[in-house]
Image (cartoon, rainbow, N blue to C red; front, side):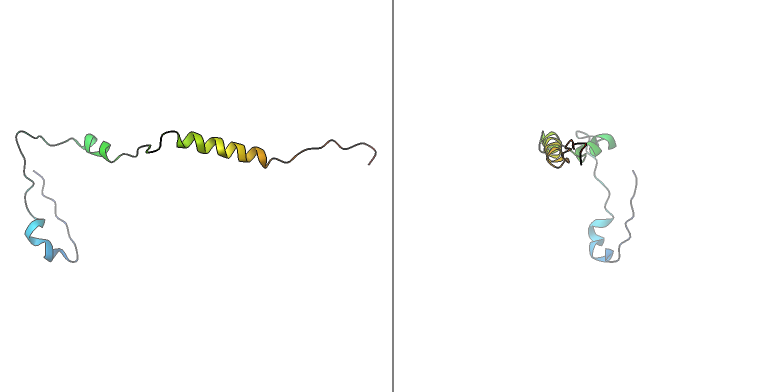
Length: 75
């Protein structure tokens, strides 16, 4: 088992819990790093938001496009 040492300026107030061994339970094996990382991976909380934003941006870009007008040659 690895021991982690945390060096903090105010570590003295946490001395009673800071250096405890991590308990291991036979009926509850440790989770792999990949599975732990997956819990904190970004997710799309609002499905369809990206598509809606892209559509709105496209509509706004179309509104702001300059209008080209054919000028007469007689100017």
